[in-house]
Image 1 (cartoon, rainbow over the protein chains, first blue to last red):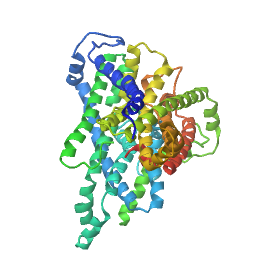
Image 2 (cartoon, rainbow over the protein chains, first blue to last red):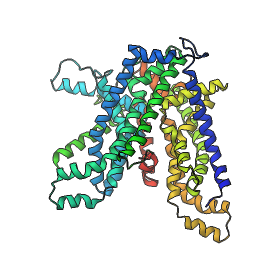
Image 3 (spheres, rainbow over the protein chains, first blue to last red):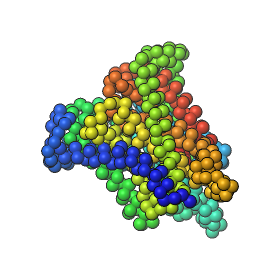
Image 4 (cartoon, helix red, strand yellow):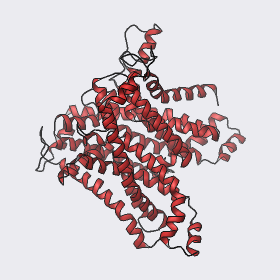
Length: 286
Length: 259
């Protein structure tokens, strides 16, 4: 066992970089959100709530926020529908295949997001793989517009966030006592009933954890909506970029960023506090 | 398991692999635009990409940034992990959560905070603030892998070393460190990739002159659509998948990712 003094000495550099690089900078960001905002105002001062009033009172910005939540929700739902079967398959498959499947399922996380976004452009473009195939088969005459639509954003988002859903659910499945499913079968339940009444309820903590991670990741994704969603602010993150880089309205950009931060921290807090109380939590928020 | 289930799994695997595989195929095309399947075969886009100074310069920047950030973050993470695993103290869980907090904060918010924070205290050097940001985003992964490998070390081995007369430092250097070295190296490898591939944190911190490779690719794609991006991407894919295999062998990818 380590001496208390040694432990403190070992933790100090870590806590110092967290304070210097996270706590203080985020504090400055929040402070900036209360500065008087105007176009071209990189340095600003004063104190006002006008930025928040503008963000939450203007239908243009509310539209972007609503679209962000809507697309993130669809992405999360699709991640459950794709992630659960994959996790179940990985759970049941032999040890030898599991390692390879893990690398395969996790590859969207390991390959740079600019790479996969470029891949989706090649697939979804007007002269891309899908449109060429459909035209080649004679199913359509003119290309279907897929790029720069909600569909493209959701496809790109599901692709990068789904691995987290798979891993969260797999972690929950691996904690299930194999005897439980066997007992259900012995007592006469068929496979579907065992899945519905025994396995799924026990997988719920994993689905809950996955939903939390996936929703916050989808909401704060930048590259996918920027590349696949087209130009102009169409997502909360691209709105932030637009305010900072195009309009140079730093205080207002900081306000949008502060909102994004509070929503994603709020989701994690809600998950840890509320879901753990109703017992849907076996997985810690790691 | 039924056939329909297997077909669905097959479809999902195609969905996961499609953009990656198609990029790799397109990179060998001989045409001016990415076509799938390519009508002709050539290495011209590799040649172009490897000789285009925008890409090579930003790749060197990214490599230095990833290396320096990892080398700074790793020893700090090892020290913190040692204290967290080897010492029971009140608030230990809170400290651990605090050190993993950069994973909860959206990366675009981290980038902006660093921009505003560093500007407020008067630090305007681009490389300096990039390193600050990348130390912060790689740190939690390092803490997590080192904690994972430390927890697997048998404490009795360390006790044996002390009984035989080794002091704390010698015990760490000759017993604990060799045992956790694979974990540290795996963590550093993953940290290198996290930094090298990052877009949303660096987004606000670079300039036209000092750029990272992913951001150079992103701005190139805005105006050009030739397969040179596919060529670079394929090289990045090979690097990442090679690293993935090593990580899976050494510590297990899931430990590193924490889910």
